[in-house]
Amino acid sequence: MNESDAQLDPSIRFALQSEAAAVNDVDLWPHVRQLIRSTARSRRTGHLVRASIVALTLALVAGTTVVASASSGARSSMAATAQDVARVVGIRMGNDGRTAAVTPTPGFRVLGPSYLPAGLVVHSVAYSPGRAASSRGSVTAVYTYGPAGSQATPDPAQVQVVGQTGLPTVDDRFSSSGGDRYVEIIQRPLTTPAPKPEGEIVAVGTTQGFLVSRGSDTIVTVEKSGVRVEIVTNLGPPVAIAVAGSLR
Amino acid sequence: MGYTDQDAGPERAAVELMRGGSMSGLETLVRLHQSRALQAAYAITHSQTAAEDVVADAFLRAYERIGRFDPSRPFGPWFLRMVINLSIKEANRVAMRKRLHVRWAGQQPEPVDPAHAVEGRDEALHLRLAVRKLSPRLRAVLVLHYFLDLNVTETAAVLDCPVGTVKRRLHDARQILHDRLMRDCEPGVVSQMEKRV
Image 1 (cartoon, each protein chain N blue to C red):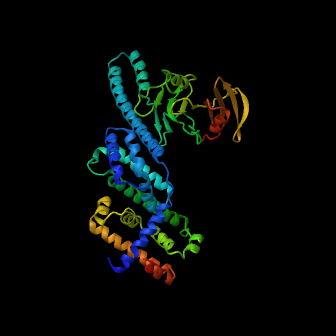
Image 2: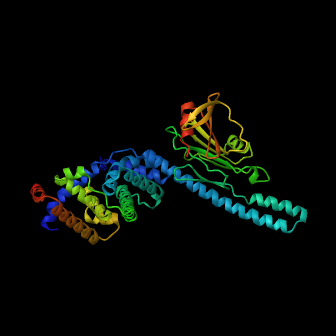
């Protein structure tokens, strides 16, 4: 190090300290915790997909073997069953923990909220491709999250919600850590003719929605991009309308 | 603001907890190291958002790779290595995007901020701006050596390169800064700085 280097050193140190002091000291723990949970979810999805592929392969091999050795009447029935088994129903989650894509495609663009009340995180996602996609009845994929370390189990009520109309249905549930506050977003394709939703007309952004109260729940129904969306929440009409308005 | 010897006990306990898969261990380590890590990341990326993302990502990696960590050693340098390397990567990514944007859009590089031009008479600000113009790799070596007070051997360990490389980068960075100051500052400013130090 020459003399000029030595003279510059304290100034460099001072400049870097001034530079570093410009950063806002924030608590990163919530960010880190969310990141770890999202990553764990993505990995679980990966495991789920791999497990589905293994199960599917085994089912196809078994189905093909049985069909090959059965009578012609039984063959067509078994082939239809094998075809249904061959349908992979899945949900792919984005890094932010929200639904990124569903398989098979539902025939409509799945919307997601750009606004959610603070403290709400993804609790579970359920998807049914509908009866049209499966002649043997509704096939449903459910992806459920629980608090870290706890056992995640599908909610039968949610399975019922996505299977009740026979239409492709995506149901995203967001809740607080205690589960006492929640927002549920149910999406189905707009049918023709579409029955008019019940409730009083409210403004949702530049469009109109229909608001109805059931017990402690508020339900707002809106139609966007060929999708009928129901927002169900126990956080009151303003939250339901704000979430509906933020769907993209 | 920074990590002290008094933190060694809680740190060791936290590392043990994290090795057992506990999130509470990680939380302790985040609280102990986030402040200094954020500052180091910011000094390299010059972006609050990028610094937060980089440090959060480094904690995620630490959580995932804690099995490879030797618990008899301090957690800080091991973790810092991830922060610095991710910061360099992020700064390179941003620099590349800026270059591509300029090329595709046929735009000129960003004009000098008038506020900086006015305040540019201040030598410290001149030096800060000159440091910002260094490549992320050179900035990183300055941050490790001058801001985090690591010696060249420790800096080389963090950057995973030979000591000679660190010395050369330090020399190059100093030379570039000196040349820029000589070129950009009024003659009096550099001599004032030299007098001050």
